[in-house]
Image (cartoon, rainbow, N blue to C red; front, side, top):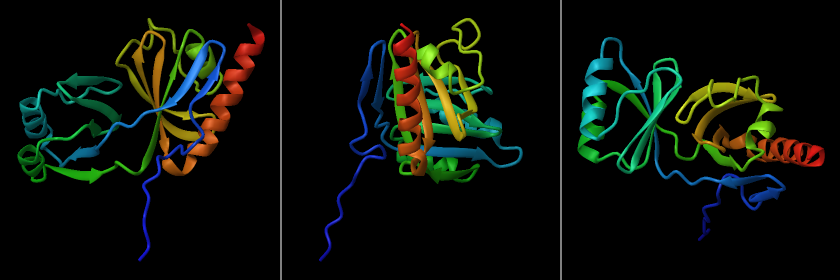
Length: 183
């Protein structure tokens, strides 16, 4: 009988450590995509509130206990962490729910050079005044679709499709090396 071994999306590619920046893999646990049915956004927000989460406004995210809720695009949010089964069952009547746990590679770029590194790859104003902690954006990471979230003053959580993990790590490592060489 075949034996299946779970492998993380970035495999053995991470961590990458360069002067001023580190790229590490995140393991967020369960990731549930929620897209409210027409006219059901208020009901979905009320159910999420029971778990301590707010439905995120465009470009925002929030944390409630051990869960996080990230805006993931028009009419869609990702809940990170195990949503209690009774709440998930109630949500099913008001929203399309999709398990995204294995679909994405999640990485964190951190360090004093993180903003400069990421600025080479995304066309966002990453200054903390324009993109504060908790801000989320869908933006191309060079040529890959990505979800970018500022998770701290010098930290960014990056999500790319799992199939693009190796390419994302390659692009980020090149940008990290380039920024370090200028220092």
